[in-house]
Length: 74
Image (cartoon, rainbow, N blue to C red; front, top):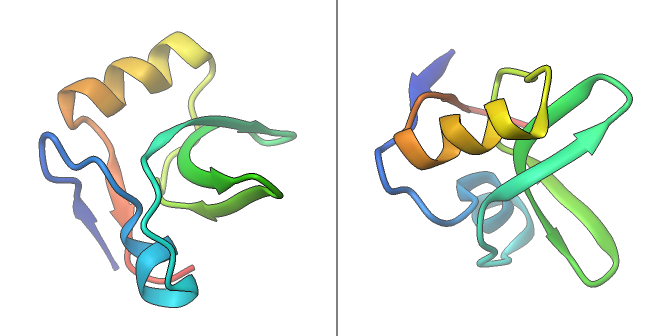
C-alpha cells in the first residue's frame, strides 16, 4: 500500500524508520530508471518513491510538486 507524498516532504521516511538516518530526498538513478530516494556518503540508502521516472527532469518535477507516491515499506 502506498500513499501520496506530502507536498514539500523533504526527508526520507523509510530511511529514518528503517535505518535511523534523517536524509534529504533527492533524485537518484538505478538500472530501472530515476526515482526519489536518499543517499549518504556510502551510497543509496532508500528508495522512497513507488514510481520510476523516465528522466531526471521528470523525477525532479515530481519531487518539487509532490507528484509521487511514498512507498509504505522498503
